[in-house]
Every structure is written in C-alpha cells, then in structure tokens.
Amino acid sequence: MARITEVRCIRTRANGTWVIVKVLTDQPGLYGIGSASDHYHATTVMHLIENAVGPRLIGRDASRIEDTWQSIFTSGYWRNSSLLNTALGAIDVALWDIKGKEAGMPIYQLLGGPCRPAVPCYAHAVGDDLPSLEDDVRRYMEEGYPVIRCQLGPYGGGGFVEPNRVSRPRNAWPQERIFDDEAYLENIPRMFAYLRERIGFGVKLTHDVHEHLRPQVAVALAKLLEPYRLFFLEDALPPEQIAYFRLIRQQCTTPQAMGELFVNPHEWLPVIQERLIDFIRCRVSKVGGITQAQKIAHLCEWYGVQTAWQEGGDNDPVNQAAAMHLDLASWNFGIQEENHFRPEELEVFPGHAVLEHGYLYPNDRPGLGVDIDEEKARQLLQPDLARRVFSMAEDRRADGTVVRP
Image (cartoon, rainbow, N blue to C red; front, side, top):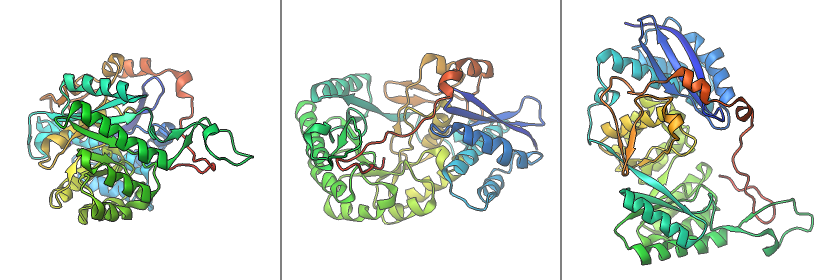
C-alpha cells in the first residue's frame, strides 16, 4: 500500500481564501487533494496542517482512512474545533481521492454507487426589491433549476431599516443600517405572498434566515410562512438555540434546514434524532470530510432527514466535488446548494464538476475526479488581496446589540 510522504497546502483564489491540501505518497504520481478552505482563517488552517497535523502523518499507510480520521480527531485532545475539522476534512478527502485512484473508480462508486445520474441544485435569487427579485427567480426558472432560494438583498434583507427611522441611544455607535426583527417578520411573508401570486406554486422556493432572528421571532416566521409551502426554511435559528426547533415543529409544518455552522455531533444529533429538521446543511469540510459526512447521511436516513450539504460563494471546486460524490451515493439526498465560479477559477481545477441547467454532473475519473494546476493556482492568487483580513458582516439592532449570523 502507498505511504504518505508529504502533506502540503496550496493557497489560491484572488483573495487567498481557498486552501487546497495535497497529500503525496511514495508511489510515483499518486496523490490526493482535499479542501481546507476557510474564508476567515486561511493562514491559520495552513499553519495547523503544515506544522501540526501533516507532519505526524508521514510514513502512514494512505489506505487507513478511518484510522487516520480517528487519530487526527483526538490529536489535539480538545476536539470538534471548526479549524481542526477543516484540516481533518481536507486530509480525509485527499485520502479518499488516493483510494479511488488506486481502485480505478470514482469515490461515489466506493461509497456504494450512484443513486441518481446527476445532482439537482438550488439557485440563489436576489433582488433589492420585489420586482427585481421576481425577475431573478424567473431567470433561474428558465435555466431549469428545480429549487430557488429567495432573498431581499444581503442576509437579513427585509429586516434592515435606516438608523434615523428608529429610536436609538443618544450616544449610539455609528451604524450604516439597523436590523429589526419585526420588520423582517413583516417583509419576508410579504415577499413570498408576492412571489406565489405571480409565479404560482410550480417552482420550489427556499429562504435563508442566516440565524438573524431572536428565537421566538424565528418560530413566528416559520408559522407565517406555512401557507407559501417552502421547500425549506434555512437556518432559522443559531446553533446555540436549536432547542427552539421543538416549538417550530409544534406550531407549523414549514420544512426546516439546519447545520451550516455545525461542527460538533452534539449539535446535529438532537435535531436529527427528534426529527426536528428536514434537511441537514453541514459543510462537508467543516464536519471532517467524507468519512464523517457519510456517517451523518446514514444517520439521517433512518430519521427521515435529507441531505443538503452547504456550499455558498466562499467554497471551492474541491469541496464541491466531495459533496457531489456524497450526493450521488446517498439515497436520502435532498438538494445541493449551487456554486458559481469564474472561468479563470475553474481552469485551476481540471476535471471540476459541471453545472448545467440546475444539475451538477460528475466525470468518470478515478478518485475525486478533480485535479489542481499548481502554476495556475499561484497565478490566480493576488498577494495584495490575500493580505486582507476577512470577517463576517457585523449587523446590529437599534440599541447596538450584535446580531449573530
């Protein structure tokens, strides 16, 4: 069996937020790649892999995927850290890539074979007002997307008000916009009433709350949206308040999707076992790669929960491919979040998945099916942009309190 000889990171994208891990072996030309991308902590994850996790793997049998996963999981004693999970997930996917190449089969074949020929995806429709949102929804309908997410501007849109239109402290801190739960509670049901009146119920629609609401307001929103028959309501609650899903279930039948911020089994186990959600939304790399995500998918199957692995604009084609292999091999797959990459970004990853008319298509290459052109990856990186420090949008309520995204 092949033994690991080197584990290294390749930083790419213009802003440097993509980190691809390459695991090399003692077999000529045999290596695997995985995604360790973290939009906010790229250099931290790289340091963790190159100085802590990677060196301890040198000389190990690359075929021992489960054993390696368990070893890394406890290597720092404290576990279930989002950063350690990201490092672990990247190495895990790279090892699956190697195993698939050795077997001469795509990863989805190693996972049990395909349950479907392609992967349906949901689109992200956005508009600053209702007519422009309707236009964007219709555009995606024409492209063939089976499910479309609907948002009024940025996350929290529909709940933002001008600072001079609300009561604030006389010594209020400077804010460009104020988030108001009640405004959101009024405008989002109005948004879906508008869309259903004009486009009907033939298209499946979703919405992402992005954890902006107070828990009791999230319960009220889910109940108010019931007449509009959403495909799912995404991240209505922050992970700290998942117990409120019990109240949502008691109040209405609006399907719930949750898990984008989950990194710990104690977060996803209760909502799955109590059947409080309908779709699990973890990011494959943030839970520890294919090995852990497949276990989550199997657990979900027995509780009637479907998968909808999280992607989004900050993710990369390598993690997208890992999610796609799981999608193909999971009977209880539900829907996959779309990604849109620029042509120069896709050129870095030969063999990348192909998105056409709302469906994601794999290739038949062994392993992950995706490679990385390291020279093009270096050319894509812009050092000035990569030196920027990224952080999540800091939305606040009228009194200055931070809204948890």
